[in-house]
Length: 165
Image 1 (cartoon, rainbow, N blue to C red):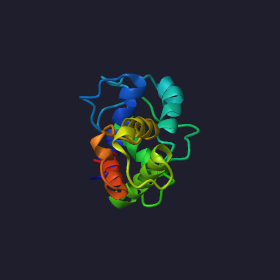
Image 2: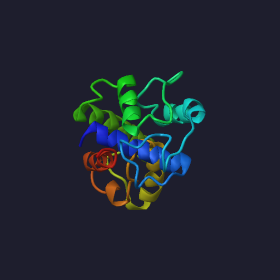
Image 3: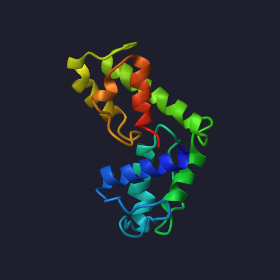
Image 4: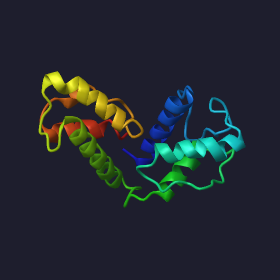
């Protein structure tokens, strides 16, 4: 797992979920103004910036303004997010993993109950839905019902595995 690959994954999910862009061909080199993204500079500096602020709120202080334009690549954007991060050691894989583990623990406690150690089979669909919603911007792949089987440590490991590449 590299943090850069994970950031690319999170950027692609942002583009898919919030802008309905088909991201199969998006790479780190894809420019924000080119196909399939196709954003104009004014949109990038306004609405897109606001969506980035919301999507990455767990990692950054909001961008008040940005130098991004149609030629800014997804890799450039990922670098800007990492450089703006408020999370200690974010650029190291173990630093990012520790961060998302904290997010997963919080979401698990909110969904299953503070300090829960397991999730009863009957409760798994509700816990799954709640956690998928709470962690939407940081999950690269949705949590499955099977991810919620086992003890707390197993569940949290399964969930964090869905948050990193």
